[in-house]
Image (cartoon, rainbow, N blue to C red):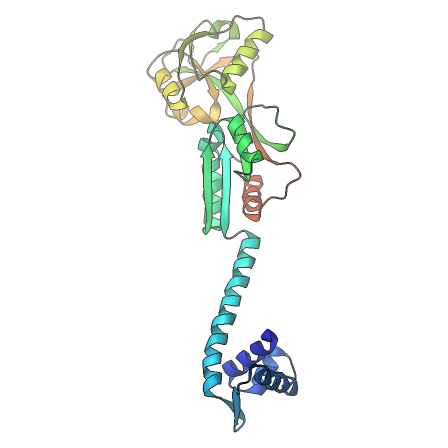
Length: 296
């Protein structure tokens, strides 16, 4: 079946007039009439009959006109879907992130993204940096946000978004609260550490080695940020954390920062994508928001 001719018939049936249909399609009236006549011959049915200055649909024409309307409405839906999918206003966006960006950075960006693209399904997975990179490489996520300085896989392209300050925090009434002291003094205190392999723990141990200072005492190891900070709030030990993780606690006066002479450590937050791979449009749209709103 000649779909072009079927479309012409559909337009004539909708307009009720060959002249108006020809004007709408920017085709000459004789060309429209000739195409429809040829179409009628092709299918072996009379579809149009003259009626004054207009046309009259035959019984077959009326039935076929309904089918044509359904077909070309579906075509419009398909075209709309393609347009929306290409511009990223529908589809699915899979994000993987480590704890810090997932909890303290991404909620703001994802919130802005969903306000702009409400019909995109967003899936955020929080995991460690090794697993995050694996998911990215295995196409289980489109983008990854990694906290901590890492040597990334050769298949990964990374961009540092910003650096967060690393802080020593204690109970608000601790003897070192808001004081300026040395690294040698603070490491004599018992520390509440995150799990082995955490960025903050590795950074502090490395810092002590660089300065020929004994490693801090592990008073308590807790596999969870909230539990770590709550322990310090209750009055035990020192914790070494990223400032985003304790900003609200410091503002509420529940913990206090300790200033260490000559020590300034940073916790970088990096965006990772697959190298030499084209981002899907939903991911590209998210990164536009990220790079236009890097405030934290």
